[in-house]
Image (cartoon, rainbow, N blue to C red):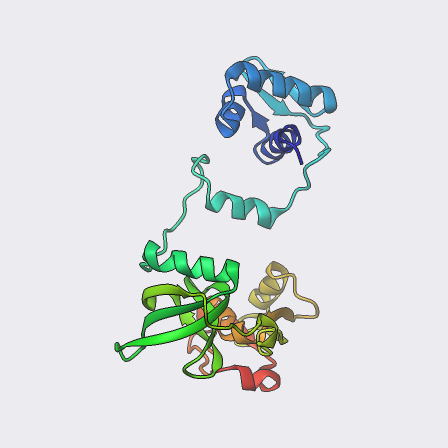
Length: 266
């Protein structure tokens, strides 16, 4: 996709969701002069002459009632996700999550190790609070349940484990240690299904509403996840695998196939 195509798609996206677009908005998005932005909008109007009309009162282009996307494919989830990193929508308010500290001089060797398939010498704070020296071979960064993890082979434990990024205090590349390929992480390459249904303690109306919201089939929501990430998925959905909340409104959904995946839960 060249830059002109990207501009056409952005014009269409903004006009589709906001119902209007102006020259200043486009100029800000792409770092263009007003003249360049005006020419870009004119080009779009040539490609889709029935989509936009100029409103002389508001000095902007408005989407017409005949608006049809030519290049942009509307996707509700993708659009909402784009708003998470955007500071250009005054009608959007985000709740900031507390960020766990990850030092640059610790993260950089990790990303280099991932890119170059190298091992890492590191210091890791265990839950006990004791700093431990570890030699690991990472293969994937994982963001789950509000924090970053590193999936890696641990030479000390002789198994693949998940490490919380913010618990590393030191990391350096080890270019000599042979690393096992990620394909050997059999658990990582095992996929399981998590099946959820509305909590039966909720009213029938509430259950039907949840089924609609999650797009359930026959009252069941099925998620396919990597086996080692199953617990993170449950945590992100406020569902404890072994404890049922006293108030059904607290979790709303329940895991219905727990017995089938018991070996992956903790």
